[in-house]
Length: 305
Image (cartoon, rainbow, N blue to C red; front, side):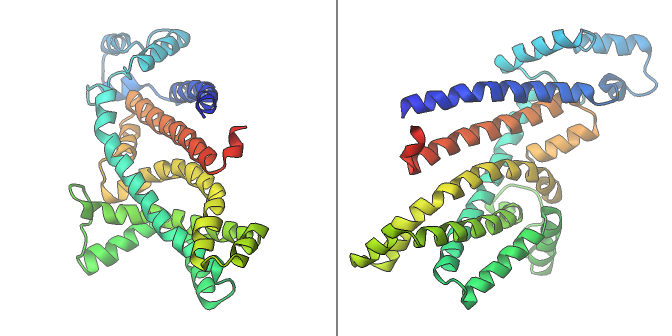
């Protein structure tokens, strides 16, 4: 297992290099001058040159790239052009909120999808299977930017059960988590159903039933564990989609996370802050995929070979 972990870590290194390089190059390919945007159209040329020199933007692109890598290695992501604060500090303040939102949305999706998918598979072509398939399709049809306002209108404005926006307590987390987790729950429900149907038709399931095991043990102890292997892969891949969806959801619910910080940085052309936010999201995605590989190998030890 230790050898497998080190092998996966070695595969991560070129991915991390690519993420850092793409984030750096994309920001520098965007049209416009961040210093000009920061100082305004009426700024004197001397002031622009002085600010560009202070932020190291007058250096050749290759030198800037090496400086950026040196900063990333030492945990220095530069300074925000607008807020005049270290990017690392701003990202560190916003990251826990986004992580809490993504994990809550993932929990909502898993808690809804696994029982629903198992129920749908064990009751194939019956009324509850059709009902769950309908709701899954409905969940897939509603994007975050449509579902969020609907939930606000119903649960925050109409019934006044939950706050409209902001943060501070678990009640503020409910609507954003449902908004982000709803579509993922629909995807996972269909995945669990399909995978469970395949496993329930295998020989070892018939053998377990022939031995007189309880149906609940057959379904949850034997079939579900093997059925979760492709589902875990999808969960890992979709976690990146949750982080991307957080940009929209955090804007709708005024959630103080990385997504909202990214939108603010883009609006203000704060390129250093945009780099830091995108780098944080990208590296989180890489780390999640690494841990997904570990869980996958735990569920299916043959992967280690």
